[in-house]
Figure 1 (cartoon, rainbow, N blue to C red):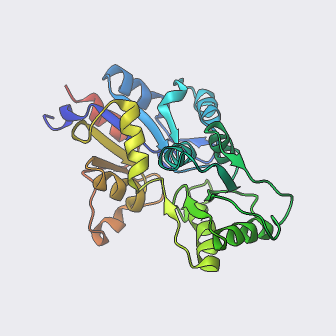
Figure 2 (figure 1 turned 90 degrees about the horizontal axis):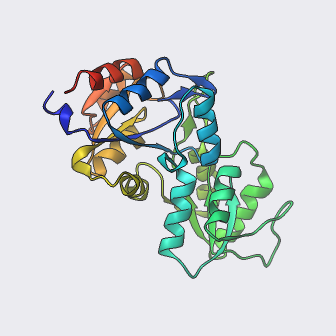
Length: 272
């Protein structure tokens, strides 16, 4: 219990941890009740780039959980903020993604290059920014590849090859990135988990530090590896992508493993 007392803040993944698709995990409301009762700071940080922060707040409200918008961090927001800070003079971007990424980039002042089909010969952009989208078509992929081949920086919101759903894993942002990387022979810079920018932004919002913060997630290769790289202790919940049997074959191990939110909440509840 002494070690548990050092957990002041949690960075919590959403898809596969709090819900699958549109189905909330068992014990979701009680988990947040425990966090508040035990006065744990938290930021919900998802690699999913499809939704806006408003949509996530609304989704949680529909599940019976009320949280302020600043406690939700998407890879879209982290990506837009990272690009703006690193390249303040460069503004034109082509987006392969849904409303979450489009709004995040627009809100940070980027000029979004739009086209009904292929962008056309002569089109140029400073950035091609790619996230998960269920509406991708060949024209989008061709436009992104063309712009990258003509000097645009290739940036991905997250590397998740799949995303958890009620019917099992389905293709995610990493699958779209792989298509474009194959077509251009250019490797994207990834902002989201497991890379550092996402964790830095979450810690900034928490006003926390690695010593008192843990990462809670369902993916060994992003949540757990990323948390470890950022100097955080990590918690794996087994309700999403990674399974318990995979632990025998990975170098980076989580500090704790819980079957679900109910077991994690009970552990936190029993701390002093």
